[in-house]
Image (cartoon, rainbow, N blue to C red; front, side, top):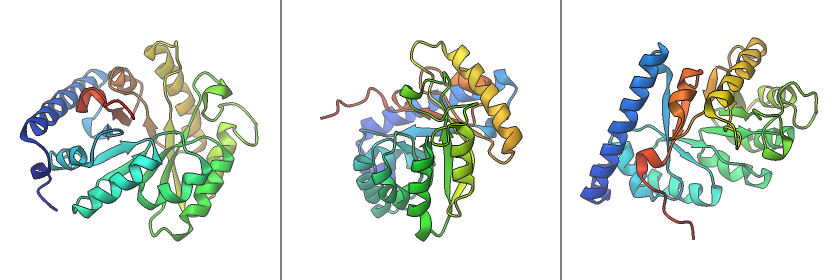
Length: 247
């Protein structure tokens, strides 16, 4: 592995190191308060809009998991990072169009946003040539509003019901169903959102006992998500600072 710290300005490296120390401390405290083992919670550094040099610097600081939400940006960044001799675990966390499935599976280790049977099938086709299974989380709708995205819990909808989507993932030979992902709905307090998500996750694990991952919580609310069982928290601004303006 290359010395990734050499690829970023010293002041930026110090900024990232400081942000990382603060986030790790917050996660430690949240786990302690929830009575959970710190090893149960993975921090995903959400590096969307940030340069590959930041990914390399974070890897040099011991961060192993990186998250991206736009294939157009992520594919090139993953290639640049790999060319530098660094191979983090890439999580695709954004809304995914079916026509991007083949590109995403070339670099992503985990896809968090499988929310329809059609997308699950597109990913299954795209993973046919992978040597390792693609870990997949079903994105679930906490409030049951189909317009907001996410598979619908308790719904028998053959296209977007939570169980049909989960079964489509579980039945795909090139994929591995590992759990659920959710975003707190607009207008919901995090406490209410993550409490509801915990209920959905408990019912889901009764049917899929091996799917224990729960991706929930971002920079402003991940402590609450951890209290309600999150195993993966997606942290951007608290770690990397204010996001650059998209052009």
